[in-house]
Image 1 (tube, one colour):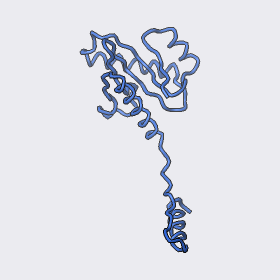
Image 2 (cartoon, one colour):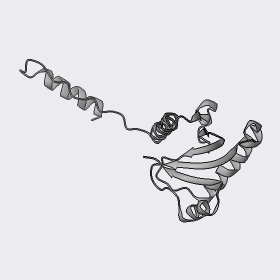
Image 3 (cartoon, helix red, strand yellow):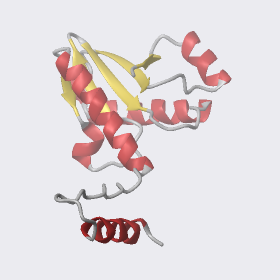
Length: 150
């Protein structure tokens, strides 16, 4: 029996009781999809940086680029952070990092307004989601880093 029918069944059973005020069972919420979970984390990160007073461009949302490596662009003084928010269980691979770098280079070529800023690539995640080779690569390269924000 589906959750909805179970809920209706409980409702009808409760209504048939002799209680003065029937209690209504809670309708079960649909399970959150991976996309919804990603969106809620991206919104959380957006609000985090806005509360710090940084300028935030919700790039992938505004451009309709779902699956894009660059989700947010943050301006903090004279630094532009190209941010990829990561709220998935699979680790970031070295291949993912190279794709992020490639997409970032393309973005910078098509948006020359940022050429006078310091550019930094940043992965933002709720826990450490880097495989071993990615972790080593990030530690050896100053143009890219990660930040854990819960």
